[in-house]
Image (cartoon, rainbow, N blue to C red):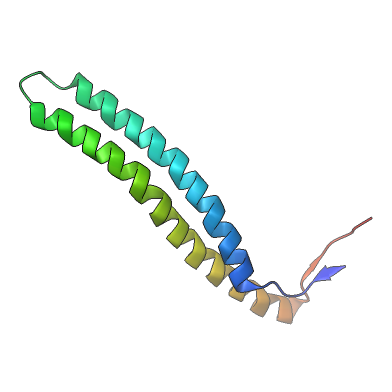
Length: 97
């Protein structure tokens, strides 16, 4: 079997989901680091502690959305380029049993 063409939007939707999950994991890690950093701030800098918590919450919301959008666009462009290249070189050969 030879894969000669892929559906760009189908590839992009799958990549968006995967990138959103990756963004969620990284957002949670960033959130944890921000909260811990906020607690490590000196007591007289209440602003720094509050800012760390706000950045942490923002990361959990913003990073999955940002990663999903960038993953969608990147995969869409990659799939279109693959389709153009496979027209020239013949696609990817896959052995299936």
